[in-house]
Image (cartoon, rainbow, N blue to C red; front, side, top):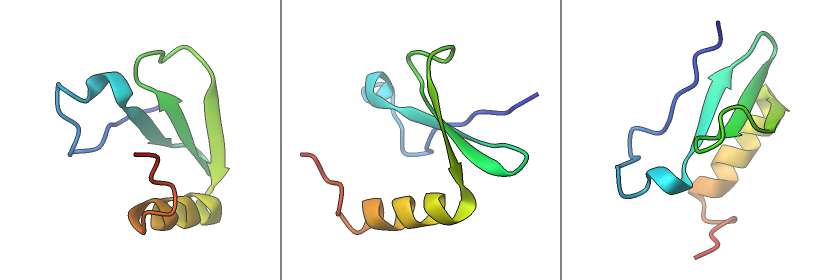
Length: 63
């Protein structure tokens, strides 16, 4: 069974805009927490590390 998790920084006020991640056999899965049965992204570990690094650096800040 795949265990999906949200960020520990997620609060009830932000729940409508959360993603969940899961460690899959060889990849990282990403899905919308509002639609757990909907589409999912699958990223290899190197791509996941690059994406999270760039998000933390503000490269994908949409606000």
